Image (tube, rainbow, N blue to C red):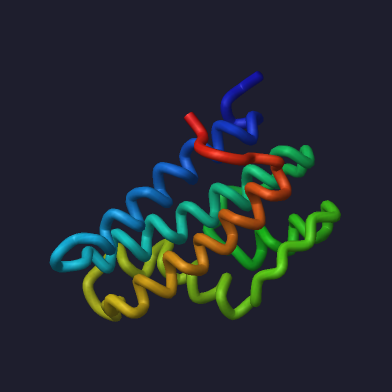
Length: 132
C-alpha cells in the first residue's frame, strides 16, 4: 500500500506535528509560530487520515472546516466547533510571515484544538497508545 493511502502514515506525521507543537509551548520563551503551525498541521493530517481510511479523495488544502465537512459527507461526524477549525486553519499560512503574530494564549488555544481533533480522530481510527 502506498504511504499516502495508509491512514497510519498520516497518523505518524500528525503525531510528530503534535509533539512539535507541544514542545514549542514548553520552552522558557514559547515558540508561538511553531506551536500554532504544527497544531494546525496535526489536525489537518488527522482529518486526512480519517478521509484516507474511508477511501475519500481530497485536494491538497489546509482548510480544516472543508476537510471536516468531507468527513461528515463520508459519515464521520466530529464534535468540533467550526469556529475552532477556522481559527486553526488560519495558522497554516498566517504564521509563516511577519505581521499578525500569535500570542502564547493563541498558541495554547491552537494546541488544545489540535488535541481535540487528535482525540476524536484516534477514537474513530481505533488507535490507542503511541504510534511508531
